[in-house]
Length: 349
Ligand SMILES: C[S@@+](CC[C@H](N)C(=O)[O-])C[C@H]1O[C@@H](n2cnc3c(N)ncnc32)[C@H](O)[C@@H]1O
Image 1 (cartoon, helix red, strand yellow):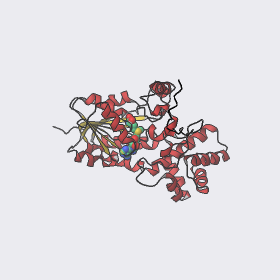
Image 2 (cartoon, rainbow, N blue to C red):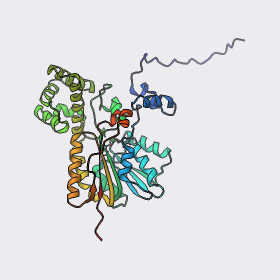
Image 3 (cartoon, helix red, strand yellow):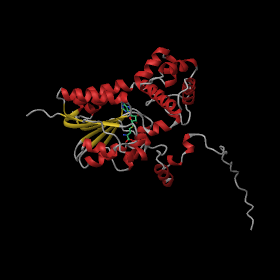
Image 4 (cartoon, rainbow, N blue to C red):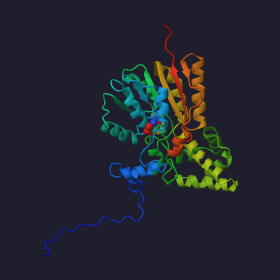
């Protein structure tokens, strides 16, 4: 029988086009609980599911840090919390981990995820802070030194893949690159305000860019507002130099890296951390630092060697530790990772 009852008019949701445009609409992996199979598919293809970060060299880091139950650990770069989870599993029961990150967008998501996995505020505390403020954070928690400190430098995949954050060019977005978007200037303004010579020196100092002068000149000749603009202008400048495709790609990657380092003042904060580490570690405490380019690794290597010479570290890594071939195959973002460690000396008795 037909039902004649009038139904309230329901407006059809507006068709957004065949291909969803916004990052948030585009990737099923952003809802891993609903689309677990899709997440698995992305992982097995060697890619990182959107909205997540695959922790790098977890076993190697645990081997250097050797966390044991009851210890006090710091993850100075919490990111998606993958390393923090692995450390927490080793220091419980009775241990505690303090996680720091400058990113006010991803930090609450990571905290919520780890809380939902059962890590309560008694064992896991979160601070929205630059690791340059670690001494203050420890003092505020009534702590003198940590048994374990990890710093996994650079940006997370969540930051890199989200075009709204302006770090990458897979999808164009406003050229921002701030890990903390409430502080400092976006990369587009840093570019606009930096004179051409200083820009060229910045590309050399932050990324060892061999074509710094040509790239800087091109960047100053055109207004750059988006990551797409930046990509395009650098490619055009390098095409004029008749560089092979692979070399061009490497220069684009280095230009993005150099700008990101400048925007977030990454070398100054790393230098601060390296100087303060001996005071932040308890006697016998271990530190592991994961770097992703030569400018970072050079600093870490020099600081650990000098601390060792001065007797502040009882021992340090000899050769740099690299990810296994299997890890790089499964996660190409691990390919440039370099790991170094040090152990704080214990006072003579
Ligand atoms: C490579 S990710 C860390 C990933 C993390 N180990 C994991 O397992 O998910 C680097 C993180 O460090 C943060 N970061 C970078 N520099 C920082 C600094 N100076 N102080 C605090 N956090 C920082 C970034 O915002 C980013 O979330």
